[in-house]
Length: 73
Image 1 (tube, rainbow, N blue to C red):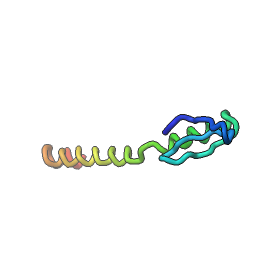
Image 2: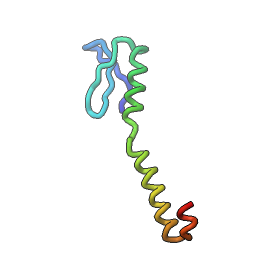
Image 3: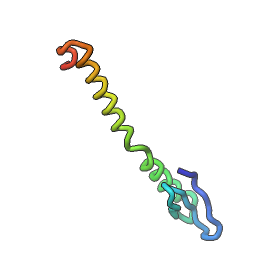
Image 4: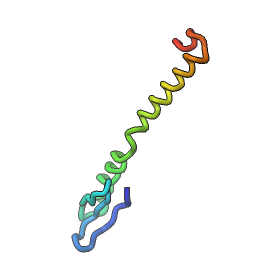
């Protein structure tokens, strides 16, 4: 995600979000909160999936390389 930028022709603050220019506000201070919200929303959602897949891989390794009791624990 690009930083906020001011378009002189429209006298507004914009941000480029996933290939789309999003108009935020005329005032830079008012633009900061929506901009930060967009940054949070654009964080990869797959990070939780990768944690779950990592844990599943570890449990599968435990099942194959440790006792049944350790795996169940």
